[in-house]
Image (cartoon, rainbow, N blue to C red; front, side, top):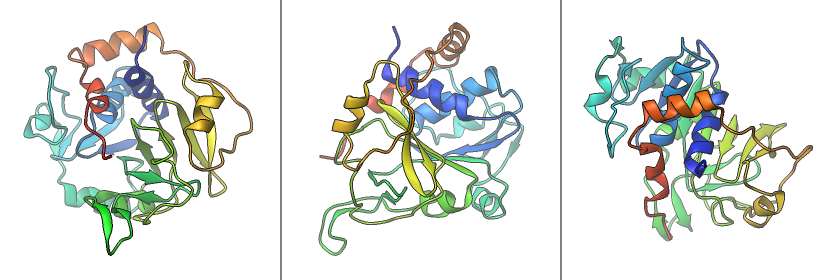
Length: 243
């Protein structure tokens, strides 16, 4: 029996292509596991860069609460500091960047700044940080979000931290893809119905053909469990969400 985290990790892993340069930042257990899964299966020449600066480092095989610790430098081929990641992306050399946010609309706008009015917000969030630079400049910015509801996928973002250029958004319910400047439903997760997505999305969901993601293979799950025996990928579902 597979979990939502299993589906999301495998879905993200399948989006990665051999020889791509891929980056994830802080609070990124699912992308971290997905990258390492891809490196063991179909994308063995992936160039993996993490926020501490390790290039093709090892994923620790114990329970951890950070994806930005110095232990991610262990086994690395080289050191590539964060400032150079931004420069790499600006030069068009960063293939994939994993980012997130609090609100998303059907135009691919991302809000990571405030909930409510900007001058008198209900909640003030960390802000753009990497997303404001990497979403516009990376070739394939991939958003992942473990919460899929009408407060997250909204008709209009309260504030636009960055916009457009998204490659995909992966949630426990589905995979969205950008097409002609709009978000389209690409695939449903295996245990999800179209109605589940429609009733939990605040904007009108566009789709052409409703298909389910293929179930994880035995090889994918075998490698995933070897890479992540402590099931770090489940952590994001236990983190407290902003109310």
